[in-house]
Length: 163
Image 1 (cartoon, helix red, strand yellow):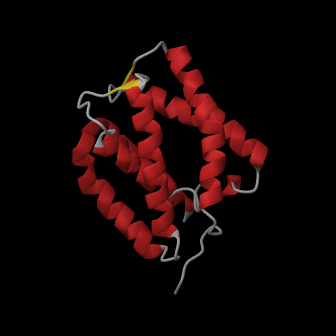
Image 2 (cartoon, rainbow, N blue to C red):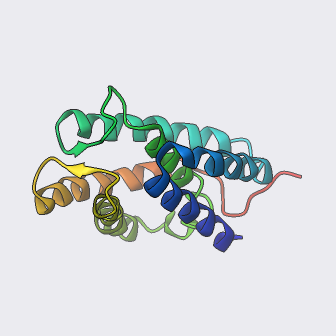
């Protein structure tokens, strides 16, 4: 099931990057199906906590000029909130192998999420307000401990499902 979880995240990520808020038509049903399938008590709670943290982190970065969106407002765009929810859905499943590996989690957080933002920038979903190397450095410094912290709030073992 980790593969299905990973494919679901990528389907939501690509649709959100290329379709913006229209991606909600695909992403919301996928996330509802995810929460229904994994009826563990904290699955929905984890998703909601990750979305709130993501909104706070990325909206702060937006207000400091690190990110610029076509539809600039007080908060990040809804399509980016959807990506955060989809990311939250991976923590106990396709990314669960990182849970007990602190050093690896910090390293993955340092390297991979900034590359995801870089891909979003290359595809035109976001603009960087600073140079690319500076922006990636900011993201790496934020995401390394952030990813570790997100695993601390998601405590369900992989593939846990209530009958």
